[in-house]
Length: 92
Image (tube, rainbow, N blue to C red):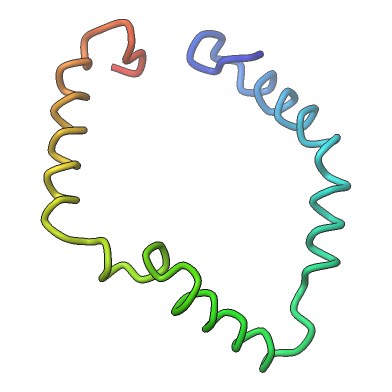
């Protein structure tokens, strides 16, 4: 595996990414072709059902964005501040 932070060789990183993408590309193309929208009305109805009935806790920001999210962000930022000068945080 090529790590940009260690090698600083952008070309090697891009080539590695393309090499990894090639085996996945047929599956990606197949999925995009098979599961594309058939008509706009049906697509809109399916999206409405998905957002409001199947996964509203993920799709509707108002259901999960509250004061606990602010506390979680503060905890993450505090952890990053503690790790800033350590080896675990290589981008400082």
